[in-house]
Length: 503
Image (cartoon, rainbow, N blue to C red; front, side, top):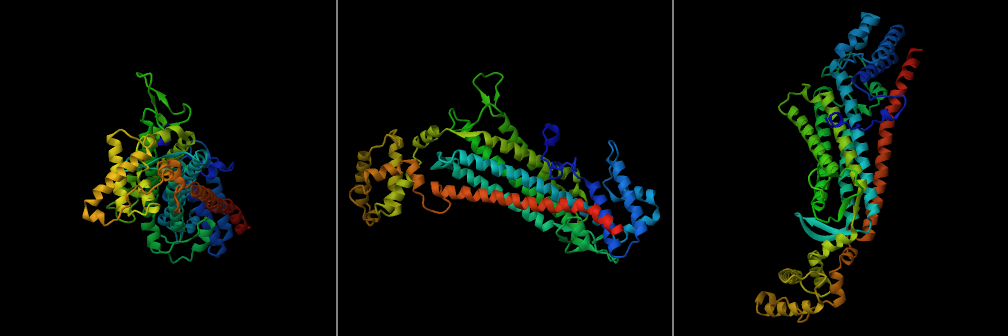
């Protein structure tokens, strides 16, 4: 796993950022919380006598203290947790397990841990959105080529394309929040798979454990949802990694040029070749791309463990594998964010690449329609013929003259008069654009500025998009804070609530 074999520090959880939670929570922590919540719910409902409840609570405290010691085994199954509890306070304490099962206990622990993993993934993806925002703001006015089918297509603002990547990661974050909403249901009370005759207050259990609601269906809670949640987490992680790799693939297309228009800043992550003095290899980019592929492979492992699996089987619920998947995805996202923070655009080199080819061609066709009142197909055909002639004669947008264009139009017009279909188009006999209009159609900055539709790369529209992305970034932080603080508050309040119930 990346966090293990690469010596990197996994993304910190909300708990790890707080001094009273020095380590990340595990299944054993949830077993303690579930038992304490069960004590509260049963005492409050009059189902458990306070003296026995106090004995159980004291035993839980002692066990927790003992198992925090270095080298102590921390059980991950209730069938290995409960014997120690009964050993310390007697078989009468087994009444705590009435109306429960290892099924709903571990379903609750797994759901809680996976939801915590999703919040860590959201935090790492939010770092990427923030890094992209910084890059777009640094390079707000850089005009660069946009590519479709791997070929230079049109001029655009680099900040506009960066914002497009922000939109992709914001959608991933939305999916993660939606996933949390779908699975933020406490399985306690579902017992083995069909509920219990013991009147356990499931709503109180959900509240005490920090869940938003109880499970809608007992069979789903214990047998199906526990498989679906890991699968959905894997899909979200895969989407994020695909977006990382798509960005890096675009970057590497440029980086491979003799003089790329986008560069890694400084020397961080750039390695010299051992044999070729001139060569600078983007080692960190290569590592990040590889790491994203590793995560995608881990995510496919979830799929392979799920297929042909009968509901209720535990294959897909492996706690360590899900921890590794989300940790590795978080590490990769934060590595990617670090790369983004170093990127710089060579404005002059980007313009030189634009002027080296005919990226402006569609604008010529569009302006022939808009300003010259030529039908679109005729305008498109003329622009295409202009480019073919220019490439055959080594002419670029910089060296093209107005006189050459007017002469080519004359030839185009004459050919149209000999074609019945084209003659019906009633083309003007002279080139219908002024020299100033043609010059603007050949200028990448003017082309971008003339974009008038919502979501376009015009400077005004791009600034609006970046402002909206900044607001979306803030909204993500607010949602994340509310979600994590609700869970942290529930955990912090549990012992206090138990003490009050036993007073």
